[in-house]
Length: 218
Image (cartoon, rainbow, N blue to C red; front, side, top):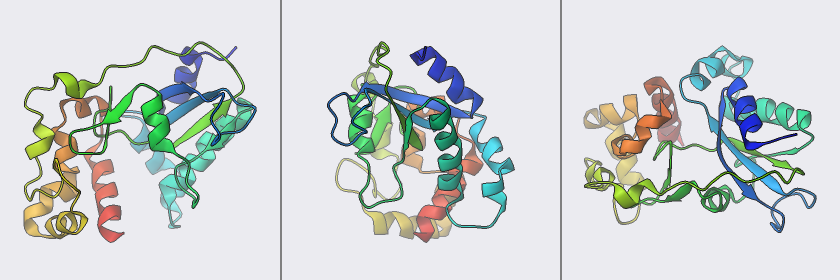
């Protein structure tokens, strides 16, 4: 019998975390026979070393993390007789942001991107598994922004590219490309790092640097 606890254990064995579970019985964007959706992301500490050891990380081909996600989550979905879904590979794209909010564990942050109750602004969704197993849903989380003193994310960007207004992508990239943006490039977005809950993500700085370099080249 699949439960939220057994899913968490299985995810950890695959260097993943269950970021939320929701009822999808009436969701038109999921397989008709499914009634539960487990959202998955990188596990603190173990994901980055495991990915670096993988064939995808070393074969020199494009999109290694996406391919790692397809293999690991896809194989697990087959083991569970479920269906693997991914936020990439479109269009069309699966509504992962909506699912994240509906899971009761993610909310729009003061700066716009989703904030997770355990991973803060460092939350990252690598995929999901749709299941035909109506087990009891876990208790919803609590929005950490409602009790956050000072909301440091609002003032963390040194050039104001990411704040309470719209995201200035070109301003962000320009700063990251400069000597003044070296910290952002090497350790990750200062706004995401400023979130007190982001500490729970256990994000390896090398992992953040990898994603920042990908973003800069996009």
